Figure 1 (cartoon, rainbow, N blue to C red):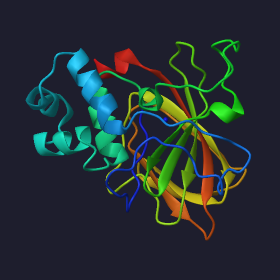
Figure 2 (figure 1 turned 90 degrees about the vertical axis):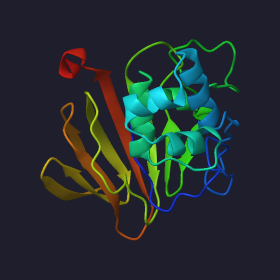
Figure 3 (figure 1 turned 120 degrees about the horizontal axis):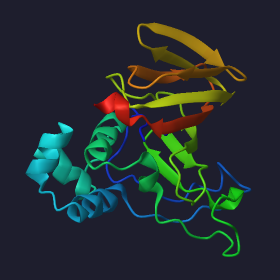
Figure 4 (figure 1 turned 45 degrees about the horizontal axis):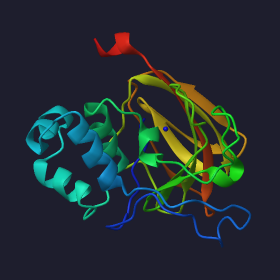
Length: 218
């Protein structure tokens, strides 16, 4: 979800791309701009140097350079820090979108027009429509070994979700619990949280990120 949530074991060069047919045989996904290109475009649009973006995000200049050149695939924690510094939602990483029926209204996202952001053992499938809004909807596909990363994530927006398949360990604040298919959750802004794969089969989680609460950032 603007955020969202590292994958252990990610490999360099992976970015937003088509999901292979053997995993989703009934769906066809479009090719999208690599992560580095989107970050570089957003940075230049704000007239920020790598040094300044490093100061704002807390991510080293070296790492930023590798991300922009698609030499290194960022963890969700690093990507979230970069996007927060650029004042951009996680959904911007799925743009541009294409392939949907042109006559569709902007509030619709067709099943065969869901872009995928790949981060190693964690893939994010965008469900949010193309219209301008602050609600982010996605499905997290978490393979064995997948997690949100070594460090907890924080984001100034409420989050919630529903486990669709498999199991995950979800940690919110100081509490951790195992969630299985059918279990749901919700927690408030800026609460440190993390998750990791559990069980033996890949997990799927419907993930919702609410509007950013500006007063929480003051």
